[in-house]
Image 1 (cartoon, rainbow, N blue to C red):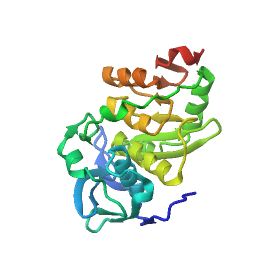
Image 2: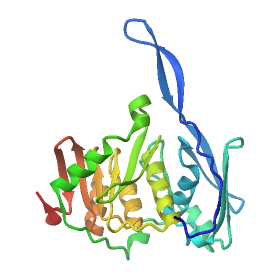
Image 3: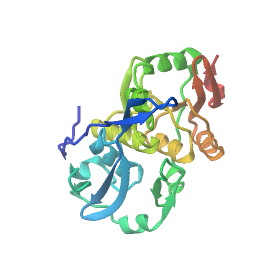
Amino acid sequence: MADHSIVLSDAGIHQLHQTTVLDETGQPREVSLTGERPLTIYLDKKEIVTLMTLGQAPEMLVLGYLRNQGLVDSIDHIASVQVDWDVEAAVVTTYQSKDNLDQLMSRRTVTSGCGQGTMFGNVMTSLDNLKIDCRPFSAQDIYDVLSRLSEYNEIYKQAGAVHGCALCSVQKIEIFIEDVGRHNAVDAISGWMWLNNVAGDDKVFYTTGRLTSEMVIKVAQMQVPLLLSRSGVTEMGLAIAKRLGIGMVARAKGKHFLVYSGQDRFNY
């Protein structure tokens, strides 16, 4: 449980909606639609960004976004996170604001995230002193994680149009989040880890989405040594994973997967 006395709203919202469509024969069918809502983050009254989100865990999403962007130095600096869907806003109040916040926000990189993500500041510089130690892993480890994940992806199974991310230990799926963008899902998991003081050094991070540079950077900030995806890998994502020592396994479906980095730690 959380050791931090942060005042948090509990504003997770219903994520599926119904509509009538016609199939290929012209027959009407009731189908589910994935929800998508704008959420503008205000940090000590300063507007930071507007995220398009499913709304499953908005408070964790906000915490993780602030953590991964380096806009708040410590979870202990945060006093409250209040989400209000009536005004589509998340208001964050801190005890101690970051001195160079304006400077960080002046450098904005539009990433390849779904719907275009944004990263502030010089994100590559923040990795200079970061080194992850990829633990040994086996084919059976990958199969075990994939098997445990089979009961998740509920929104995707009903409506599609979402990505899923999970933080996994040897024994269980610690947390699973679905959102309209994979970067939102990873931020929400990061926020949950930050709030609950959960270490990442013995975990596996899973995503349904592609492994781009921003995904690898965020997982590295969470200190998770092994990254698993059912999708593909970009060149920059792979280069960063190799530089930081993160194991990267992708194209993982059924009994098939490819080990892109951490090959010296892999026991087939």
